[in-house]
Length: 629
Image (cartoon, rainbow, N blue to C red; front, side, top):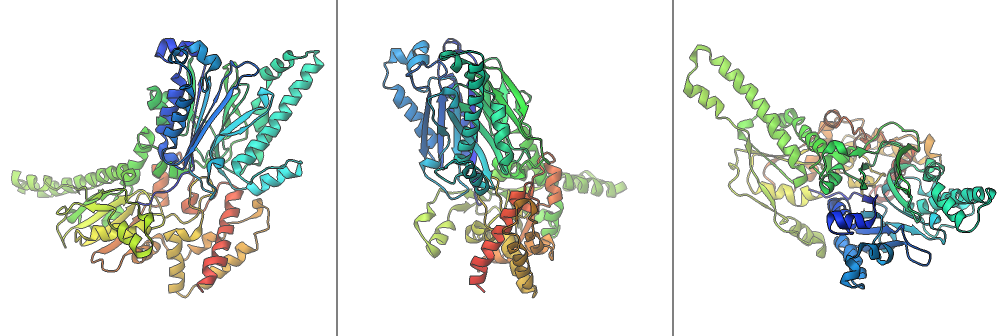
């Protein structure tokens, strides 16, 4: 119901044959460019603030451009950047555009390597200068570097200081830009090392350039740079001489997948993106392991190399709950299982009145979990039916059996996203009034005053939309109870690895815990946590402990959920309102391969995450809390 922002999506295509090959086999030399477009569109949900693409032409001669880039802002950025490419191609005649050999030598964006990026900012920095890919220029092809990433680093200040101590002068404090400068510096050193080797062997002129380009080892560049990075990332890059790479963080926080055959190498943030674009079976696509890099040489030689030792696996569970495409076989199955796990708590919330309960879902991303709930209740109901039939014994009749078998789990489409209302044009009460009409309901789908209404969402983070519109809208159907169900656990802690939720007070679970402490005369705990967090502000990140977890310890999850329901129920709503959350154990049972649960548990996989959550609490306490005390 409340859209979260995920930082980025990545896509790369490396053609392993000359453009003429694709012209003859697929009817166009734009095969790689077209595949990149499809991969970016299939990941449009991952970033709608901006998009960019880059291309490397490996057959360019001295004096000819060999690295090209297009970037744009806004939700239509993908269309804009590809329209920009075609505008540049429009400067050539139809005959020239259809000639693959001419294209390979002369046309812009007619290259062998393509990189695409979709951006959502999580740091508050926006504008075209922050849209990936980032490009670092040099007269030596091997020293040119272009990067893009799905990531967020927790220790940008530390990286900045590291570069400054070594005499560099970064022009902006942006994690992408700092990484570009850091990697670029190591690429320069790697190039210089190969240059000295060439001179030692008596080579000169263009022979030196060829020697460098044939022996640049990107793995060395990554090994020298990445140990300093604290955060989640899937980092893609390409050099002007055609070295391509994608590296995943050592905790596996951010996802990355790849595919290769004798024609192409492809990389994307999600498996079904590659699967659909290239019409593949799922087992043909590989997941990049934590701390590993896929490296493709200018020659086309491919290898996977361990850059950093893998840490404790912390693949992001929110990818499974919300962000990744539900068409992925594993994710679809996991989301259904999240729904199945919720049968018992839902039964308790409706007082076991299953025959008087209607199930539905909002939004569409919760649909798979909804099917899981229906499956779970079908199993529950079938078990009841079997017991009832067995209990009939010698009294069994066709009429009685038919009556038992006629019981069904009731499901309806009770809410519709009516229009995309631009509520930002209004403020305050006017905005809330408009938000209350974003959804429409199916009148007559419930028996007023008799039926319970259970509506599942994939996550309840802030609660704003529930309070301002959803609960009031659902109450128009006059249910006896409204049960809002989250397929994921209570979101209690900020994220610092690429999802746009970094402030403590934006979480309804946090606000509910604060309210409970006040209600029960335990407000002193709020200050005690602040004192402990404040004492750690200047400590190295490796020494910091997460004291914010103390905030939730006095209460059960059910107590916090009940307080949330109280806080989110608008005045004038007649129905009882209940909120049911997935348990942390249920999430892990449903998603065993994605144990990264810091949003719910506070178990941050990196020291930088722990330091940032303590700082977030300090900022909240010194800001809003003290002002309102």
